[in-house]
Length: 138
Image (tube, rainbow, N blue to C red):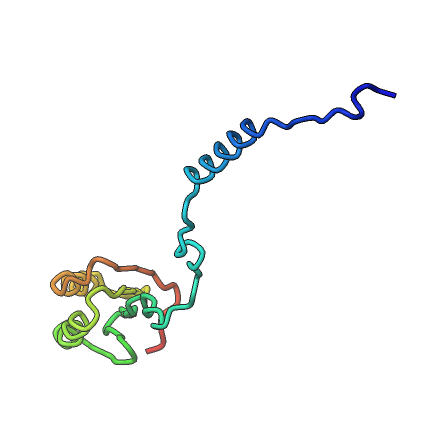
């Protein structure tokens, strides 16, 4: 038999108490309170409806034929007749795109007059010019 069998072993309590206090102080110092808002933040749908998306401005199609202007199914024979319509349209939709569609028989003077009118109403910013091979039925 071993000589240590009947001996009582004492555990050093002072060392265990020191470690316990060290661990307790470590956890107290490093403790951080949880931020409740961080756990509550969800992507909830908005109560208010989304604002309407940007609607592009309307386009104005002007067909220039040899003797007249066709705008929105209306026929104008001179630039003086067309001017009130363009003035009103530019007030209602100043940023609209203007599509000029030129017939093969369109006269240069009518085209220049139309460009001058669009410049006077400040609608010359967005102009598309197309040359039509086929003449629009008159």
